[in-house]
Length: 66
Image (tube, rainbow, N blue to C red; front, side, top):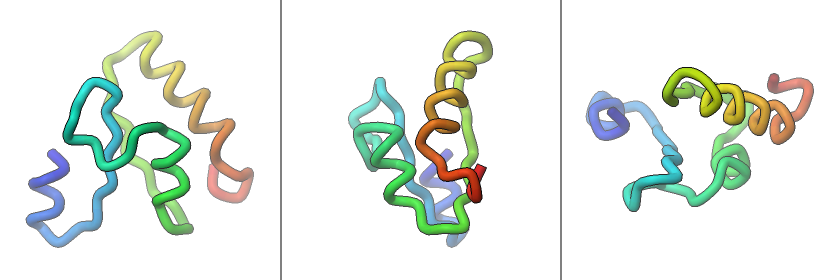
């Protein structure tokens, strides 16, 4: 997906904890790498993984960017 978006001219920084093709190695580094104002697209399996990811991002993002 990231490569398709890049080919369309969009800037993409991706994180996948289970892939060597990630652009960063943590959600914290992902948040640091995205310029403000930030726009995040979260694609994770439904359930606990989604809840954990959103909770972690909520802690990492400043109130102005939530």
